[in-house]
Amino acid sequence: MKFRLFKQVKGTQDEIDTTNPYVRQLLWQDTHELDMQRMKRTLLVGVFLFFSLASGSIAMNFYQVMKAQDFYYFIMLDRDYQPVEAIARRADIMADSDPIKEGITANFLKSYVTWYRSRIMDEPSLLKQLNQARLQVSGIATVKFQADIDAHEPWKQIKKERVLVDIEGQPVRVSMDGKTKTWLVNWIETVQDATGVVLRQDKRNGHFLLAEDPKRVSTDNPFGLVVVDQEYR
Image (cartoon, rainbow, N blue to C red; front, side, top):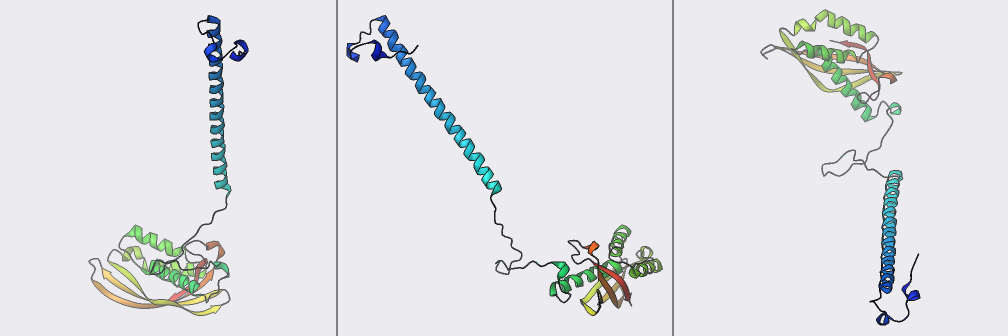
């Protein structure tokens, strides 16, 4: 049951007889009701603010997730650390005469010749190196590669000497026949004994016929280059 003091007691505050127990009871009930209403309002405001903040936080997180963002990539920096503009191009439609393709092809051949002809005086490392070179050949080049390895037995050779390969200049494309290309590579093989004394230096050159195999495309070999034939002396 709700009570209102002004409905129950006539007169002003000064005229109220607070010595009357009934009046004191009415005064207490009225004060208690006002306190409870104030508490309810405080709780409702707190709950409203809490759910408002929670809803706003969820909405902001959802907005950040769904919002499209711009990202900037510095492909290359010049000497002043300023970004250099770069244009991405598809490797499979890049012309053979493109400087980027020629540079990657030259590096492919330099790595292949180094793996193929170097002789490290550590058998596990040598086998790993030769296997790496073996993965770069196909067709008749595979037959020639294996015949050369069987004839020279490099695992026996490294017991008494090692061979260092130094590529001279850049490999050069000398001819093109359809999808295959022939490249010329010049290099020097320095033969040393186990103590590092130079025994001899052999100047060599080789012609390597390259093709492109889409199945071999990778981040290390974006054009799928493979050696399909080779001749060196």
